[in-house]
Image (cartoon, rainbow, N blue to C red):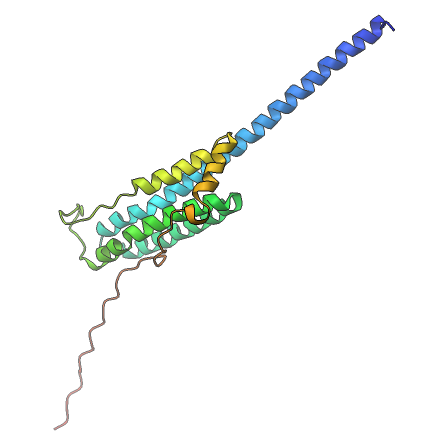
Length: 203
């Protein structure tokens, strides 16, 4: 049965409207996933910055002034809060990425714990507190590289790359994390000298 001019016009209009709707849906879906990916990218970037911030605290303690030890302790507390926040948020996204992040944080803390304690025990350096020849300078390039590799794989639109994150961070294949040291290294407490006896002795 042949279509009338009106029916053909309606059919063409319907096809055009359907194509427009499909294109709009695809564009909206692509924009949603792009926005979600960007949000995750920012999250992992800030989390990575916070983890390496603990490494930077080693140098802040070494170059501290006599009047800002309290500020540094507060900075340690603030940084620990951020690490806990990012770990929890990443865990809500993926337990495999959480394991990857915990491994990075554990490596940085474990690699700097003793050095930070030694820096607290050492006397305050003269301004500007330059590095000493005996100073150790730990690096975490390998641990950082592993975490960033997991981030790139997890954010990839290719499903097999996401599976690689699962493979690297599940069961016995996951690189064991270094046990976490105490959250906030603090300056050593100096013993208080005994008070002098000001009372005379009766004779």
